[in-house]
Image 1 (cartoon, rainbow, N blue to C red):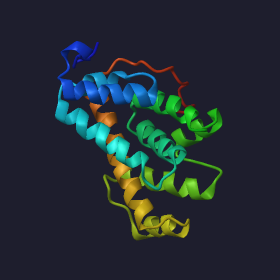
Image 2: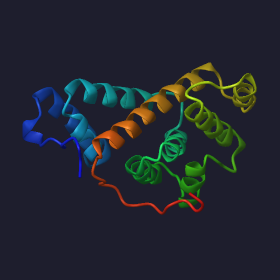
Image 3: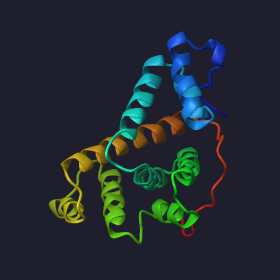
Image 4: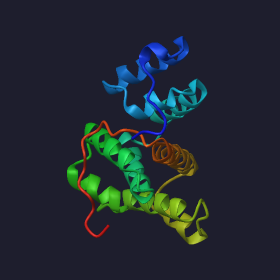
Length: 181
């Protein structure tokens, strides 16, 4: 049972409706996380704004979703794992890549380095060793890409924590549990 209610479209202030309309246009639906965030127009605007800005960055959509899956699985956010799996499929992630990303792995060494970095950030609350940072650099990531990764991870952690606390009702297809978890 959700702790925070998902507001109805008619309850939303006009400026919030415009944001929700944009989400609808981009995603073909308005996921419950957005309806629930709409309780605070400021929180919704911040979340949508950072999300949209990062879509225009240098990181490919597929990598952003793989990072999201790593982060959300670590944070045990069932809502966000299911949501990012669904979105991941729309940007080219196979079911195998989705499962790999949830485990923080990839057969692609450059993607693997990014997922390892994301995992270390979450596990160590932002503290990463020089060796871990060098591994990311050695994989070919520059300052701009690394900065965007950190912004993505912060956005995903916010979504994970928000859906935990709000107990957001799942409106994405279920994904299987990972073996051994």
